[in-house]
Amino acid sequence: MLLVDEVTIDSDGVAHGKYRIREDEYFTNGHFPGNPVVPGVILCEIMAQSCTMLMIDDIPGHDTFYRAIDEVKFKNAVRPGDLCEVTAVLVSKKAGLYFTDAKLEVDGKLCCRGKLTFALVPKAKE
Image (cartoon, rainbow, N blue to C red; front, side):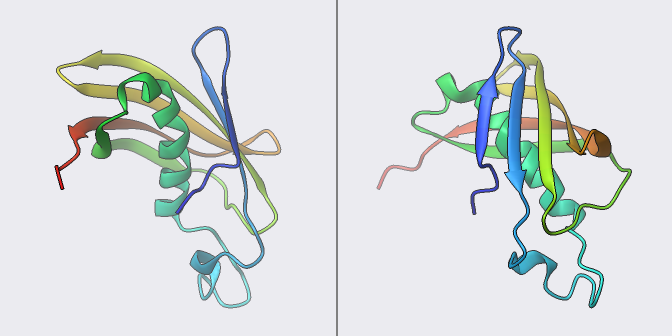
């Protein structure tokens, strides 16, 4: 499930991702009846997919796995029609782990932020 419409990396190495929540997204169906809100786990995944661009040169031949999701805060609801704008920074890389900070905003309003850690695991040979 792709949750990124576009991602760029600026000259400072900061990833900027965008994803528009569509009216027919399966994850808002029933969450909540009459008051559709994007689940927090989906907001984390939107941030994570933008974060992967920070390690794009190392990804070929690997799968990207979460190792940790820390200090995540949800500040404002995200709803169908909203444009999610993610800002992600690679804080450090060591021992095959990638430590990132990310935030997700809608119309300049902070909706979610957190520290996401990833590991690149060699793909299984078929």
